[in-house]
Image (cartoon, rainbow, N blue to C red; front, side, top):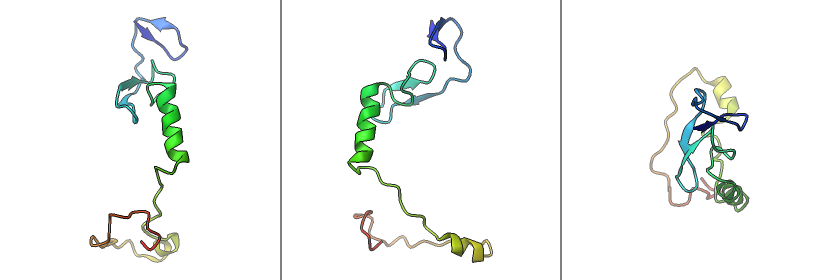
Length: 93
């Protein structure tokens, strides 16, 4: 027995359903079953929101500037691998 996107029970599994692991607790989730997909529960969804609010997650700055892209000839970008990765949020990097 499955629950379709309208929330009613059916014997057919939704072909468009996505299955992933909850990013917080790693439990199996299914978009056809879990209303809080990709999270397994409202609790995990709220914990994730709290992590963003507490700045536990960060969106990194772009590796290159859009102006640099416009001026480039499509050459490869070479990054230094010797940078200090112990402090990824250090404003000097």
